[in-house]
Image 1 (cartoon, rainbow, N blue to C red):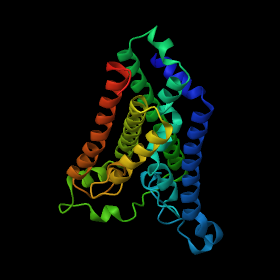
Image 2 (tube, rainbow, N blue to C red; image 1 turned 60 degrees about the horizontal axis):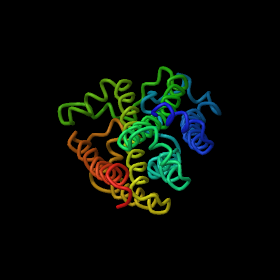
Image 3 (tube, rainbow, N blue to C red; image 1 turned 45 degrees about the horizontal axis):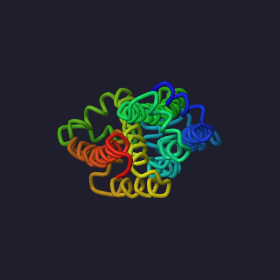
Image 4 (cartoon, rainbow, N blue to C red; image 1 turned 90 degrees about the vertical axis):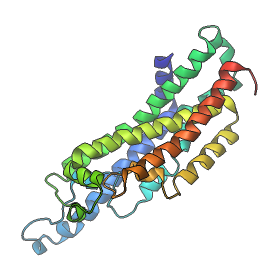
Length: 269
């Protein structure tokens, strides 16, 4: 069942489009950062006898920090993250119910197994949707910004007056950036679980899409925004990040409870 969910997702034309949109946005983000870093030097190298100055460290140049000309790529991905997850396949229970596929599934596996395998499948798919393009973006930054050591002056703030997490992050930029790639993947996977569970509880495309966005928007616009927990090298207490994770987990758990009741315990609410 889990293997089937993964194969169905990656064979879907809509899922392929979403994946390549993510990949295109993150490749564009690298190209934009690379261009704005190099344009002055490439056009007037005589003004830089010592070579290009202020070459970003790859972990600073990466998508999660984006020191390029605009943060629109981050807005497009992160502000609509649950919608991307639904389009990637998290809304598949709605289609399966409307086309009468669920009774056929119930002849092969239990409702409980269907619920958990479905959530496991969309979590893995959502995780890969975010992690693979982010990793490709970071590899491009490692190649394009090789030997870069400019941290946008963040390293000047390292010291006793800053949070331990910030000091640790600046001391281990590569490891921390990889850690945040995984964190972003987990958050995307959880949002996909929320979407697929809501799709089981309320098999209606307009309702599910609207609820997912209405749940997500307050989380990205409060003082403990989950977006703060998705970006490395921020000088905030760890409690701020943990609060963002907890606020995210609450609607995810509630959606999974509702989906479990609707799909496993009864036919209709």
